[in-house]
Every structure is written in C-alpha cells, then in structure tokens.
Amino acid sequence: QTQLVDSGGGSVQAGGSLRLSCVASEYTYSSYVMGWFRQAPGKEREGVAVVDSDGSVSYAESVKGRFTIAADNAKNTLYLQMDSLKPEDTAIYYCAATAGYPLRPLAHNSYPYWGQGTQVTVSS
Image (cartoon, rainbow, N blue to C red):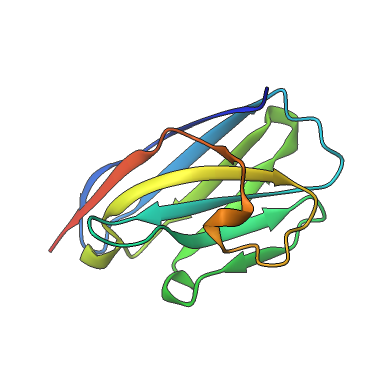
C-alpha cells in the first residue's frame, strides 16, 4: 500500500519562501507521476506542479517562475520549493501520486494516492 507523508508547511509573510517535502513508501512503479495540489477554503482542489518518472514537469500558470518541483528518487522524496509567496498561495497543500501517465496530470481526480496535507499560510 503506497503511503505519502507530506510536511514543511508553515506561516510566512508575503515574499517569503517555504519548502514542502513528501516521502513515499512502497512506491515501486516504473512509470509514475507525482505532484503537489492545494485547496483553499471554499475552493476546489487545484494542481500546482507535477513531475513524471522521465523528469518532465508541469506547473500551474499561477505559480510558474515562483515554485519549483523536484524529486529525489534515491530518497523516495518529492519537494516543492515555493519562493515569492503571495497571500493567494494560502491553502492546504497535498502531495499526490499515480502510476502511469494521466491524460490530465494537473487534475486532482487523476490521482489515487494522497498525503495528509500541510497548511501554508501567507500573510500580507
């Protein structure tokens, strides 16, 4: 059973940085996509950034140039470096994973495995 444990959230002021981490256990698929999603109060969960087993990445337009996703396969760990944070980035951030290559990699319903979520709060 694949398990994802995400961490690294916190409270920062606008313009600050945070790094999220997600450790995956028992994840042995040869091809996969892992990513970060977020959900703000009253809003639908949205894709932030994803990376596949070939190293290809995709970002939501709202975070391009500010967030960087990276995977350390030796450590089974996924990271999200978030710089130049804005108040609108405030949300619960979730790590997610799926085997294969979904047609819509930034769509949350493409992923069966989820972390428990970590809160990110950005104040102005």
